Length: 198
Image 1 (tube, rainbow, N blue to C red):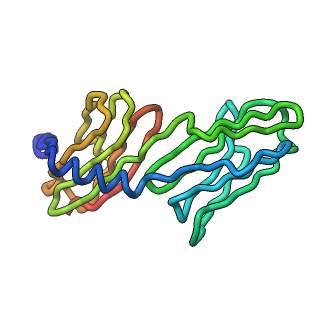
Image 2 (image 1 turned 90 degrees about the vertical axis):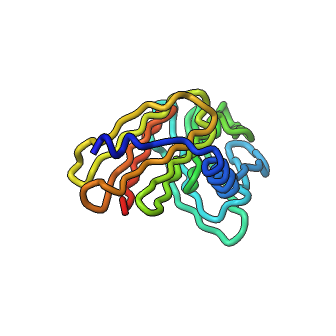
């Protein structure tokens, strides 16, 4: 099986087309509306559905909500109960995770307009037993790809060199059963997705 899965190659035309399509669907932007005392207001543009979370510097989840809107997403958070310190607002769409810094000092809360980090999630598409992996803005960190069959046996592992965009094709047409699970790790984040192998 490893022999079959090692048939993986990068095709520039396929990757560039998929990368452009991926980028068009992944972008959203945060616009600050106002900051008044410990209240911050912002608008997320070009997105209709997003998960919003607030974490402290130890990655403890403080607040979470799933938001859906037919228009831009507007939010106002009252951070009066937050002790002085640094927090992070995480905005996660189907394709991207952006993190924004919140500073609470005295009676004032400030939200950064620019993301302190952005991670594009991997995109997997299947056609005729060929799975295409695309990742954008990998930011100079290697990408580790592991593939498991439906019996949770690792059948493939590779660490791809650090590049801005990663694209790779995997032939899984001869894998046992109909499903395989990809575990993709990059920039300290791990993404797991199970896909049909046929």
